[in-house]
Length: 276
Image 1 (tube, one colour):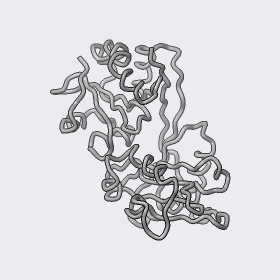
Image 2: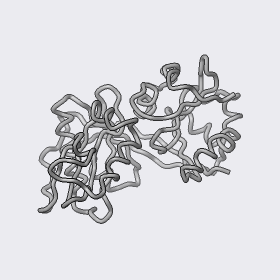
Image 3: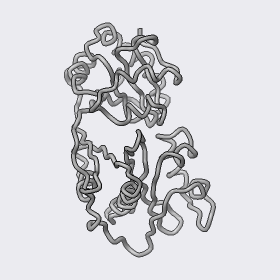
């Protein structure tokens, strides 16, 4: 029987984490990021999945050959998960294995025709950082560190689209205070509009997973690269390891990561699966 764990019980899943797995899974289990965890046994779980608080997908953990768990998965997703997902406007979900052996299970449970996409994971070491590639941006743009005053939209300047930044942070963090305590971030602004953002979306120890976005009407001006350099500079100064996770087909994202000096650590597949 698949059941949802209380947050106070997430520690029971620590042993299910694969050492070379995804940062997001560990962050939710450690309580650093938001998410829900479902397992086969609430006393001694051996298999389960994590619904990321950002709604970016489900990470499957533990034993991928747990037949009793796997038999129940299809029905559980379409009767228990689907109603909650539909309320969020989701008609499909992303299934991600915390280790590659789950890929075979996904096809067995959800069908051989599920679409798989390759994802790249990068990390940046101090010795690999390409500071010389930091771009010069157009006049009128400014990069600012995210602070309490920025999030409260008070100080020497206020922003008409502050909710863009607030909603981005709350996709990953339970509160602005928790983000300010454990994460870092920068925004590029133009007049009174936030046009690009780069911040710690996931934190585990001294590893910070980057979330980055530039508004469409300001893309092509190297703003994403600029805020990334500011972010990386602070990471290096504080012995923090930046972590970058992006789709292989997302060429602009791959280009920014590699231009800054990130090195491809490993790849994984995620599968797009429609609810019945």
